[in-house]
Image 1: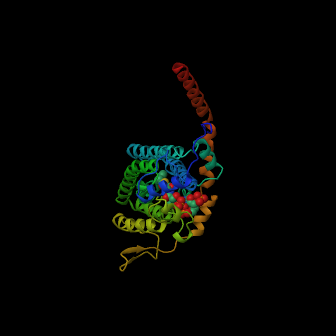
Image 2 (image 1 turned 180 degrees about the vertical axis):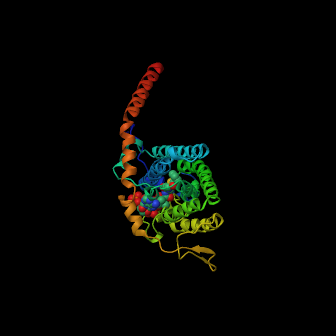
Image 3 (image 1 turned 90 degrees about the vertical axis):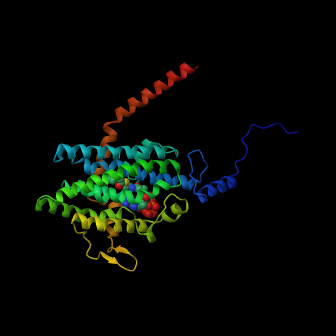
Length: 325
Ligand code: FAQ
């Protein structure tokens, strides 16, 4: 008789894959301790990290106006919104950590240009109307893209999205309310709103990613239930949602080809400048260098805080281990 072995039983990858496939097919959630294919894990880390970086970098364009807000009320609202974006980044980095990612490593990847963040945050905020337009159009696009992610197949990501979406909805309303106020103001204020809409409309359409026939990740991400809709589907939903809002606001969307298509029941927009999108995501947008430089400075200038917190946590863990022994 052979001696009993302490070796762990061989892992039956086929059975694990079948269990994973069944979870996805039944539309149940995959949780951190579940087995998952390496490609699924990598895709999630890529998307969640990009999303987290977008929230943190996304604090900068509006953060630039915190010291120049036109009233105490506007300043309090903007401060709350920018802080919310920091919170979103934290939930998302935590979700990435459940997949084995290291947060400091993700930050390094962002700063070194090895991971992306949303193209939209590489445009400047020239006037206070931009704060309103970011709330209306950028948070509006974020909601449109992220509400379906509340049903994403990975549990921690889906749950983080529920709270994020509730807060984004407040962000969108504050933006729209600010714009409504400006539109009831002077001709100069109305012109500022129109100018901001002219600059942000096309970049907000690009937030949804490349067209479906040029989106390498979509098919697999949709098969895994990470994404629930294609980039073009969500972009269309956003156009349909935004046109009536623009009409109520009294602004013109800067698209001469925009037209109502009776047959399909959709607003059809003109061609998007994908060359601009590619330039911006490859680092050549108007503010890419500035955004990353500020993020790098935040990491380097605050390294002492990280070191102190890490040393304190280690000391605390030692003390705890001693108490247990
Ligand atoms: N910008 O194959 P796909 C916010 C990249 S949060 C930059 O279609 P996928 C809140 C993509 O990563 C905004 N890169 O990729 C807020 C991929 O590159 P890779 C962020 C982009 O992942 C508001 C390549 O192109 N939201 O706004 C962009 O299936 C106000 C090929 O693309 C999220 O991250 C882009 N726009 O679909 C904060 C939502 N689009 O990685 C402050 C979660 C695509 O292979 C103020 N993410 N790329 O090198 C998603 O839903 C998806 O990742 C998509 C892209 C739809 C963005």
